[in-house]
Length: 215
Image 1 (cartoon, rainbow, N blue to C red):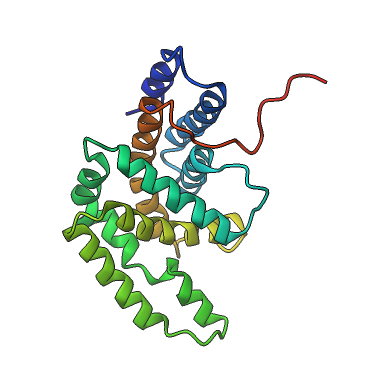
Image 2 (image 1 turned 135 degrees about the vertical axis):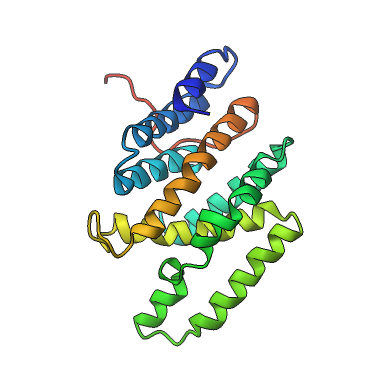
């Protein structure tokens, strides 16, 4: 579903809580930005991640990796429980042989790989092999939330590489993972936003930066 349709659907909800309306308005605006940058995968990925972040980030007075990962794992579990049409599973099943598998099987966006490069005592190859086996098992067993967590764990590492200056703009080195990430997120995020609109009375948490009127 394109951003224009989501924006229209959001505006039609007269009973939506203001906090959620702000959250989703922001998410849709960054989804639109991603659509406008379809030929620039770096900018598209950043825009898509900001859109995703706008959907799930809640104000817990903490901004470390552990807290953020915990937030989006809980967020995904909640979304999957409301996905009565199994849109996430259908998406993952349809794209598993393409961008989903490519993301999962790419060692350069596997966090322990980089821990090993920094000299930490971690057997990243063993962990990587196990993670890939887990992903295939999750797909076979219809464990959607766990499979999404594996995919997002890879994408979170890619997000850190780009946002923290660990990758060159339009670099040929990481083109495959950035492109595959965009192909996943541009389909994934509209489902998230639509589910949140449909379940607008659910408590989605307080936003980090609420709208502040002039003081």
